[in-house]
Amino acid sequence: MDFKTDFKPLTVDPDKIYDYSFAMIAEEMGPHNFSEDEWKIVRRIIHASADFELGRSVIIHPDAIRAGIEAIHKGRHVIADVQMIESGTGKKRFQKYGGDLHCYIADEDVTIEAKKQNTTRAIISMQKAVRENEGGIYAIGNAPTALLELIRLIKEGIAKPDLIIGMPVGFVSAAESKEELAKITEVPFITNIGRKGGSTVTVAALNAISLLADQV
Image (cartoon, one colour):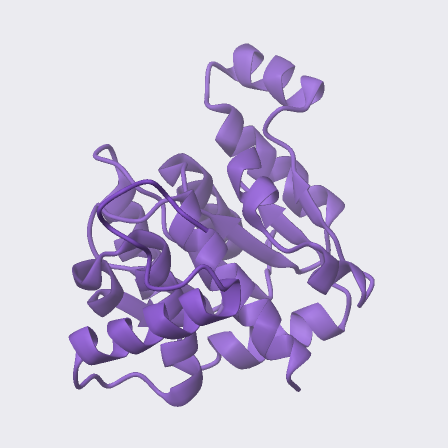
């Protein structure tokens, strides 16, 4: 294949692109304290973001990987804060165990209730998700208010997710929401320190968990 450019790609083989990328990430990352399975999550986060600072800031609760794998095997649903996560996730890996991925933020009843209460759709969508799902994996990459509301529902004994992947990006309450998540003891979590994050890296962590579930 001729790209008609001076620069030629190292390879166009999709599998080799992943292999080369992961090898480069491991070399540039250098020594770290992540376990073997934790590193599989962190390297996917780095791969999705090309951001080693973000990767080094990841915090993984000691029970997070086990809890995520068990939730997938039990057919628990994945709840996303925004539709970008729904688009980027390999849903077939959940569906084969009986689970699926849901995002409620665009639901008409959520929009109506948010307007009525003069609050964010993200908050109302978390309330709806908790009502309609037992446990589940919550993947929050965009809306800090969704994460803070989920934490509130947990602390009030209304919600008990199996796992929270909470990595919202932004300037208003993003870093603070993740600080609050890192304090909770009731639910395993994957998060990171600071403003960085986003739907892409949340999807990366979620996909890494689902791939680990397939290996058990």
